[in-house]
Image (cartoon, rainbow, N blue to C red; front, side, top):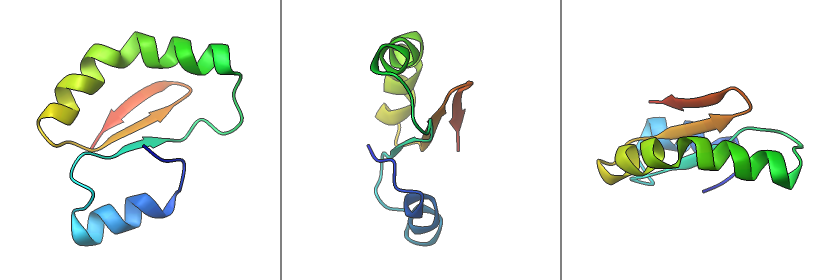
Length: 64
């Protein structure tokens, strides 16, 4: 899990890390972040189990 935007470029070039979760929410209150994660936790776990790339932002998740 990271908020480092360089992760996307590294993933596209190297395919690593194998199960990245990129948090692209910018500044967000802890309560909002917790709610966002809880809303998508089951889906994120399923995607990461298969080795997918997830980008989490204020609007939800994008699976790459």
